[in-house]
Picture 1 (cartoon, helix red, strand yellow):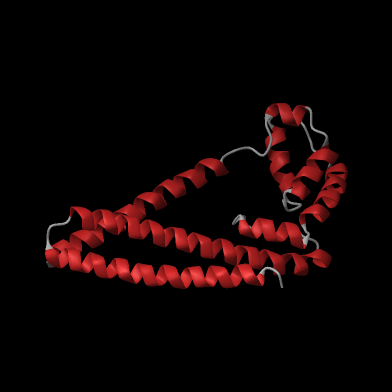
Picture 2 (spheres, rainbow, N blue to C red):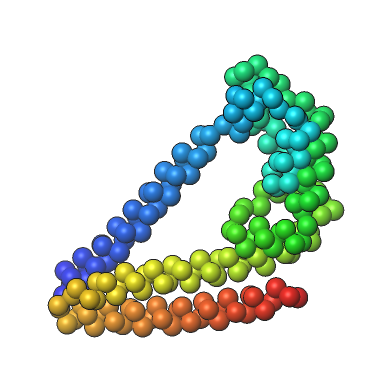
Length: 191
């Protein structure tokens, strides 16, 4: 039985590692992308680009990424126009309503809001992010349960079947607690 439990433990660990490897590779691949294409650099309206970046919650330092991308085609961003556009866009991003949406989608906050807007933004963002985290926790528990149920379906060893059923029951309890937390957080959104 010890060998069977070691195998089960090894199998579950390898499944988690496989997902982690895929996720890390995806992040690395995406991080290599330029902030603007050659064509975008050549036709850039820096006021509009700043507005879009502000509206999307990009920090002011985002212009350095554009500068690097556009240097390849010998285009220099207009820092003054970019900053003016971003200042207009960031006001639309830094609302409590948008903060809730950003948090619920699990998007990161990049410390982009001006000090006068940041506190209210963060309160709403945190509520949304907590709800997102609770939903992700429930989904992870559902996935873990499905994996154990598949193993249980194909298992003949009674000791391992008993061990799997025990773990499924534990996951059911955890999932119920996570759903209770999700319900609490959803009710708190109105506060």
